[in-house]
Every structure is written in structure tokens, then in C-alpha cells.
Amino acid sequence: MDRRTLLKKGGLVLGGGLLGCAPSLGGITAQRPVGRLVPVRASWDRVIRTTVGLRPYRPSGFVLRAERFAGKMLIHNYGHGGSGMSLSWGTAQMATELALGQPRRRAAVVGCGVVGLTTTRQLQRRGFDVTIYAMSVPPNTTSNMSLASWTPTSGLVSTAERTTAWDAQLREAARIAYGQLQLLVGREYGISWLDGYSLSNTAPGGGAGAAEAQPAPLLPPELRVGATVLGPGEHPFPTRFATLRPSLRIEPSIYLDALVRDVREAGASIVIRRFDSLDDLAALDESVVVNCTGLGAGELIGDREIQPTRGQLTHFMPQPEVDYSTFGGITPSAGGFLQMQPRSDGIAVGGTSERGNGSLEVDEDARRRIVEAHIELFAAMRI
Image (tube, rainbow, N blue to C red; front, side, top):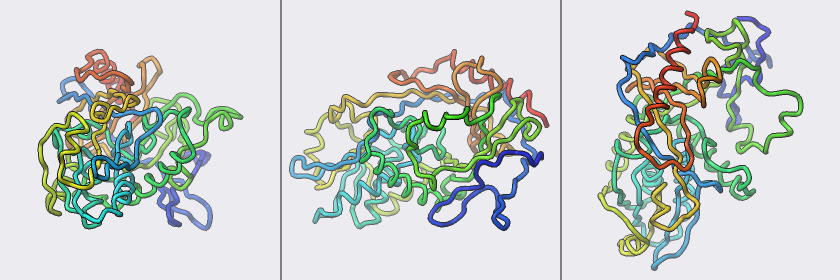
């Protein structure tokens, strides 16, 4: 590899430790060479399914607050956009802390996606007897339809709607969640570290003064993954540049089933039930109720801000030797963005984010664009 490669950051510092992809040698960050990457065997005859999910987006960000209602403590924990898989352990712990002042240790959690399941576990860890009420359970939840990796700010908030208090809340949630997810790395929970490559024909970073034009980062430096920019000839992709960032990958089918197992083994019951109004919540026996309904909060509590963001994934047959992810393609003519992430249940490819679109029908035009663009990308890889 050309040693003139620009090494922007050697790793990720968290809690005083170095968690990066390149070792430090006497204060000099060593460049890690890119090993042989196996191309995805992308073709139409290897497509096995296409799924659609609706992420719960709020321009002002997720809701995390408590209120008194019908003699109960009603805690809201919803609206995470595309960041629910990343942030759920953090907002779950913070929601639980709001409940600790209640004398009775019985709680109802409404919703059985990743936010509801992690909230249940955090409550159980603090001595609560929990019942989960939900219309559906994994694998039939929105969480199961996500690409799922460490993306704590994806589709989360509008820059214009951010406040200092909300930013602080996000950073605390991200700090807690990032630490928790690292402890679950392994086959049991389907969480692993994965190298990701952002592909581009233009040099990353923009020109002089670009940083001043950007809003303040949502995350502090210790929670931002370092990156290595690889130039022409330093990577196998058919683009001029590839920016390498390690990240946590979460496999929803494994992870969510493991969380269901954990909450049940710790004593939680799951009741299939629909809630149409606040009156239905008032009728519950539990003195603490945590609203983790995601997009359903719009109807349940009248949140007029929440709206769907539609995402669609197509899956190729599994290919265990593919051990990296990609973002981007060969040319902008592919339309929209592109992303690929390998999982044990298939190679997931996507490239849609349609705010305000609540349809669960497969968009055939988008599917064709995304599959054809990935066929072109991986056919052009150097091996």
C-alpha cells in the first residue's frame, strides 16, 4: 500500500482506551494495509427477498420524558428515526432512571421492537417486574427491517430543531449505548466489528472552509469513529477514493431474538394487545408505563410531529466470505445513495430513505436501481 495514504485518525478513543483499527507505535499511527476483499456475487438470480420498514422520524429528535397520567408515571421513549438500534440501550437506561422514584416495582412497556426490549431489560436490571404489551413481536417488528449498524445520528433530527438540552441528552444516550453494544459483541447477539468503505470519485472532506459551513457535530470526538482515506491504487473498488471506517454491525434476526429470550428468562411476560388511545394505557394495572411505540405514538398520544421514513432492503444469498460493508457506488448516475452490509441471513443492499412515505409496498423501480448498481459495482472490483 502507498504510504502517502492520508490517515485522518488512527482509532476511536472511548473512556481513556484506544479502540481503533490501527495500532500506535511510539506515538506514530501505523497504516493497516487493506487485505484481499471478496466481491459480492451480486446478480438477480441470487436475490432472495426484499423488505420494507418505516422508521419513526421526528424533526426535533426522539422523545425521552416523564409525566403523571391517571395516577401513573407515564414515560415516553420513542421517535429514534434510523438510530433506534444504535441508541436504544442508552435511552432505555435514561427512561429507567425516570422510573426509579416510584415505590412500586411493576412496569408496563408498550412496544416490542428494539427500544421496548432494551427498556424492559434496563428496568429488570433495576428490580422491576415487567410486562410487555405489543401488537407484534420479532421477527415482525420495524426493528427487524433495519440495516442495523452503529449509526447513532442517522435520520435522527433536523439541524434547525436541535437544542442544547436535547444534544446533551443524545450524547449521554450514545455514550451508554456504545459501551453496552461493545459488551455484547459475539455470535450470541449477532454483533460484530466490521470494516466499512465509503466510495467516492472525489476526495473526501471538501475544500477549505467546508468545516466552518457545517453545523456543530452531534457526537463528541470520543464517539466518532476514525477514518482512513485510501486513494487510487490503495483499494480494490472502481472509485478513486475509499474511506475506511470500522463500525459495529448488528444482525437484527439474531439480536432481537436474543433480547426476547433475555427478557423472558428474566421474568417478563409478553401480551399481544392493541392500544388505541391514552384511555387504554390508563386501564393498565402497572404504576409505571413506558411508551416505546415508535411510529405508533402518532395515533396513540397524538404526536403530530412524528412521521414515517420509508426504507427498503433487498437481500442476496448469504456469502460468509464477504467481511466488509460499502456505502456509495461507481457513479452518481445510479441515483440516490447505495449501501451494502453482509449478514448471516443474506447480503443486504439498500439505498432509499423516503420521509413522509408510509407505504409498505415494494418499490420495484428502487429495487431495480439498487440491485443493478450493486451488480455493476462488484463486477468492477479488482481481485
